[in-house]
Length: 82
Image 1 (cartoon, rainbow, N blue to C red):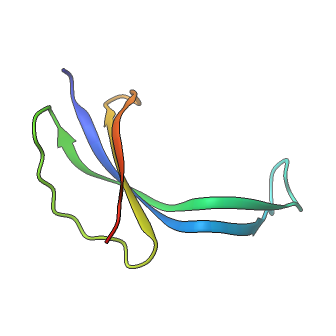
Image 2 (cartoon, helix red, strand yellow):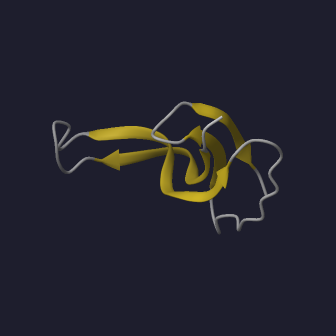
Image 3 (cartoon, rainbow, N blue to C red):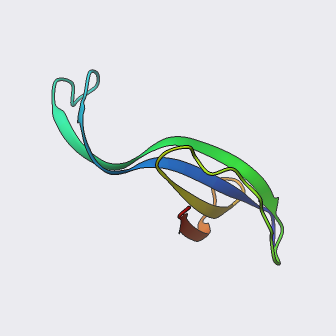
């Protein structure tokens, strides 16, 4: 196995109405769900068990996923609840 990275995506749970100010949807109001507010690489993974200690976002939710290096496929994902 080559390397993989462990990522944390913090998000705001639920649906939100967002006004679009630029691009082809400029001027439209769209409904978006679980908007990601940050994406952080938190560890390297080379196979086997991993024990991580990480701070939870102050508000909202958090998802953890393992992705093969080089924009490879997602190997595993889980939603984390406090």
